[in-house]
Structure formats: C-alpha cells, structure tokens
Amino acid sequence: MDTVRQVREILSARGLTLYSASRQSAEIFGRSSKFYVSHNLYSELSKPALKPTIYQILALSHVTGYRLADWLRVFGLDPDAISRLQLRVPRRRTTLLDSAVYDTYAWIPWFTERFASGLTPSIAPLGRFLSLGPLKRARDLLALNGQGFRYAVVGEQDLYALPYFVPGSIIRADPGRADKLPLRHNTNDRGPFFLVEHNFGWTCSRVILLGKDRILLQCLQRPCAERELRIGRDARILGAIDAEIRPVVPHGPKQLKPAAAILRRPRPKYERVEQAGLKDLLRRSRMRVGLSFREASSISRLIAEFLADDFYFTAASTLSDYEELPAPPRHIQKMITLCLLYCIGFDEFLRVSGLPLDKAGREPIPDELLHRRMPGGNHDPRVSGQDSVPEPSGFLGTLLNQWKEVPLFLRFSLDEITGLNGFSVSDVFRVGDEKANLHPLLANGTLVAVNRRARKPSLAMQDAICEKPLYLILKRDGSYLCGPCTLDDGNLVLHGYPGGSVGALRFRDGIDAEVAGQVTAILRRLS
Image (cartoon, rainbow, N blue to C red; front, top):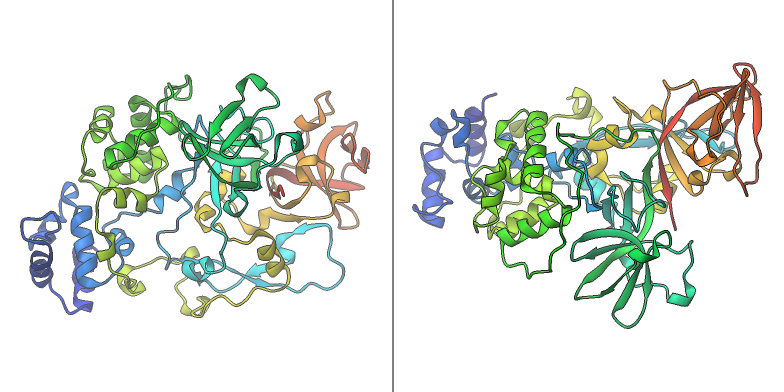
C-alpha cells in the first residue's frame, strides 16, 4: 500500500481528513509554526525530499492521539534501526548502547516450556528446554524487566578493560551496585569492574575508592595509565559490571568498515562543558566516541547503503554545521544517523532539540493500519498471544530470575553478536556444570552460540590454551563437553587448563566422539 493511502486510512480511523487535521494543527500550533501540517501533504509525499519533518509528524501524533514512533514507521522511518546497526559501527572507544525499544507493540517470538523427562544434562541444546510459542508484544516482555541495566560495547583502545574483556564484548552494568566500590587495601586482580562515564567517554575498569568523592581507575597491566577522578566533577559510576556477551570467533562480528581506516589515531581529549542544547550534545558525544567529521561521514555513507536510503548519508561539512546550529536537521534520517554515529538515544536527541514530546499521542496505530509485520511472515492471529506474558516457570523462569531482564534491543543483532549468518535458536546451547566446561571463559556461563558448520578442529599446535578455539564435543553416550580442542593423529584432544578439575581428554574422532560445532559467543555472569 502506498503511503498516501495509508495516511488517509489512519486519519479516517479517527474521523479526520487531511484538511481537518491540517486545520487542527494550525489552531493548536499556529499556521506559521514548524508544526503546521500542510493540506498539500499528499502531493508532497510523492517527493522523497519532502517527507514530513519531525515537527509535522509530532503534530499528526498529537491530533490523532497515535504514538509518535508509529507515525514515524508510517513514513518509512524506524528509530529501531539504531539497535539494528549500532553493533556494526566500529568503535575505537568503549561506548554505551541504546537499549531502548521504540516499537513497543512489535510482535516478538517467545517461548514455551518443554518438559523433558530424566536428569538435566550439563550441556544441552536450548531446544531441549524451550520451544517457540505464540508471539508476544514487546511491551509485555519489557514488563518482565525491572533493573534498568546499562549496556556498553568494549572498544579497541579501552586500556582499563583489556585484556579481561575483548573488543566487541557487550557488557551489562547494574546501577544498583554503583556505590559498592572497594577500598584500596581490598583490591586485587579479581575485583569487580565498573562502567564509568568520564569527561572523555566511557570505560570498563576496576575502581578504587580513595576518599569521599575520589576514585582511581585501576589498570594492573599498565599502572602508568591509572587515572584519578572526582565523582560528580570528572566522572560518575554507571554501575557494576555483572555480565558479558563475549565473542570468541577469530574475526569477531561483521562491521560497517569504510574503505579508509577509521580507527587509526586517538583524538585529543577535551574539557567537560555544560550541555546547553543540541549542538553541545552533538559536539560532546562526537568527542566521546572519538570520531572526526570525515570519519563519521564515511560511516554514514555505509549506513545509507545498508538502509538503502541516501538521506542517511551526511557530509563532513554538514556534520560540522550541525554543531553550530541549535535546531535539529530537517530530515529525520539525518537524526537517526547522528544517534547511530555518536551513541545518542533517539528520545534524548528529540528532547534536547526542544520538542514537546508530552504532546505526542499515546495509543498505538492498529496493526491492520500500520501493517506491522510478524516475524516469519506468519499473519495467523492464532499464533499471536493476545494476553500478557504469564509468569515464567521451569527453565525459562530460572533463566529470567538469574538474569532479571530480557535485552530485547539485541534481537536485531544476533548475527553480529554470534558471528553466524541466519542465527536461530538451534544454534544455542545451555552450559552449566563446570565439570563439562573445560575453559575459564565458560565459568559461570549460561548459554553459548555454536557454529554447527565448523566441525573440523585445527591440528595440534603449540599455542597457549587461551588461544585455542572452543568446540562443543558430542560423545557417543549423547552427552556434551565444551573446551579447547585439537586434532592429533585421528584423535580429538580436549584440553584442560591449569588449575582446572579435568586434564586433557582424548577421543577417537568419529568413534568415541565427534565435533558438534565451534563456539562463537558466550553469555556469562561475572558476579
């Protein structure tokens, strides 16, 4: 259906015509204001450059009472593109992830409990415990969340995080434990990490409390890099890092990579400034992520190619102009690009732009008018759960009680996180018993992603245990083991690690055991 017809049907559902909606926008906001919806809107929609502005879409939201996010989708503009692409943007520095879900009425695949008989195995496919059930609304799944965790991706130059984390690791910070800072005499190389926001960005670091408001970013690997900061003036603690999604594939997740190397040289630090408006937010955010205008423009071109819309591209000179102008860009695509490049939440961008978000509508546009697509292309209402999500029980309940949150914003990035094309639930295995996990990274692990097509381990070599790929091994009795594996003279050698409870194990390849796949990512608790 074309956009003009869709807009006409949505207005008609509210008893409005374009003429009456235009008249109401003039009465409420003024005919000369940016919020005025022209009665020529239908003819303007035939020209891509004349798509409605954010002001006009907010006016339509106010007049109809329908949600702003839904109206944006009507015009082919989706803030959830930020979630889809933010892990593809290469990062020199550790940066916050936008964990917001903008389309809270989207349909999400959900699970039902599969009750298996017998003892629970230490390692098993996730499908042994769960099966796909009715679709659920995102808002109903978000109701299961209560902690308000913060998420960040570790950058390539975060000295305080490396080598305990790796570039591309997604970490979760618990704000409820932000004040649990260790004293100097209680610190060691096994202390907790904290997500710290400071004048020049973010970092994952062990933190020492020096005084009432003084902290030290601890770097045991490079003591000369340790830095003293003052809470409230130079930095704030966003939370204690309690979980990690760690990529373990050799080359990491796929990223948008410009032809020119954009992660080459560090940017100069800058003094903290009071955020007074949009231009200050843009400048400060760009400095925090360590991008020049040229580098940011180069990435924006790839964003435009990925989304198949040239309006997402922003020239370096235009990016510079935005830091001098108090108003947001005319094109909403540019706003989404800026949020992606500089790690700014879309709602924060709109709020700092001075938009009266309190005037936006609150009701969702009905699915039949918005043409909201269901996952898998299944439009049968019988597969959609119309009620709220029941209280989880069994394995799913245990999982949610342990993790306290469903990070729905990551659902678009599972291919990037796992390094797998066409990721599915069958690629996930539950890992539990440490006796079956033969690597330190698997300690406190919950789930692993497995590339089931990578079933040939490397030949025996002299590399350190920590550098060997991790494999899932299926034994002839149906049980699994997980750890570093090599092939030696027709034998699968599963290596233990120093201090572990199990030494090296040898199996005849294809007779006693076989490789089920290579581990590409690990979901684990850190505390």
